[in-house]
Length: 257
Ligand code: DBV
Image 1 (cartoon, helix red, strand yellow):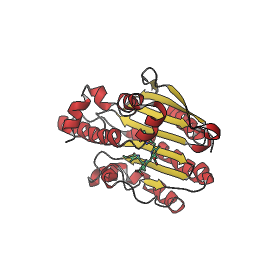
Image 2 (spheres, helix red, strand yellow):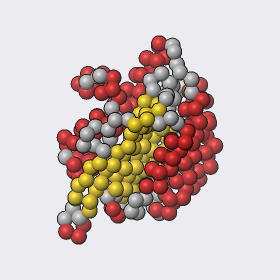
Image 3 (tube, rainbow, N blue to C red):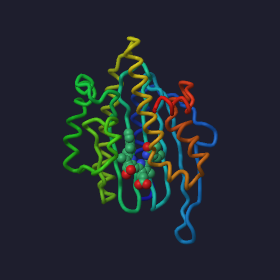
């Protein structure tokens, strides 16, 4: 399980570099690489979290968090946030390996899930990929109902028992989803209509607030690196749109109800 997701990260950076004009996205000081030693005695492990950030035309932030904790923990979380004048979905990958097994979430997460024309534009292009992989990557079961609006019908959600499945099937699906996403980015046209732009911004904020508030890694990061570091990592890097827009978290909390 050691470094299970390094090839995924390498592949993502290779695809992104080949298809986009990448620029660095700033990573706040102290968040580029974080190391902690956890556990006692024989169970002691060093957990290293490495962050990657890029921007590209049409894409406000491309960011990844890679958590390497030896045999007991491997995570790659990669999210792409488009510029607010594009109606593109988010690219979202949450690849998590714990001693009990693997948890894989892969999707192009829609801004407007229930809009049929949006679905035709952004889910149909990946439907074939989804259908090809689904029989080998069975539905992972329960996930939070409140997360439902943020996933497309082509959401790959699976909990493989075998690491080999991650290295083969999941890796193929990951490559294909990312390639298909970059195709959509290439074809995307800017939105100039003010009202539509406002709807996009609100949909991005909804998604972002949900992810920041419910981040399933919060507990883990807090245990490793403390609460202060973790909250700043979540709001200042992983899910930073409110900061980017100059909205305080307090206003955000009020807007969220
Ligand atoms: N998840 C993140 C970030 C992570 C991360 C930024 C950098 O959003 C890791 C790290 N995800 C992570 C970890 C776990 C999960 C689980 C460590 C395991 C938590 C644990 O078992 O303790 C998809 N990720 C999950 C789960 C789901 C997702 C459904 C299971 C949660 C549960 O069982 O409660 N990805 C996640 C999600 C959205 C998404 C909810 C919502 C839009 O895109």
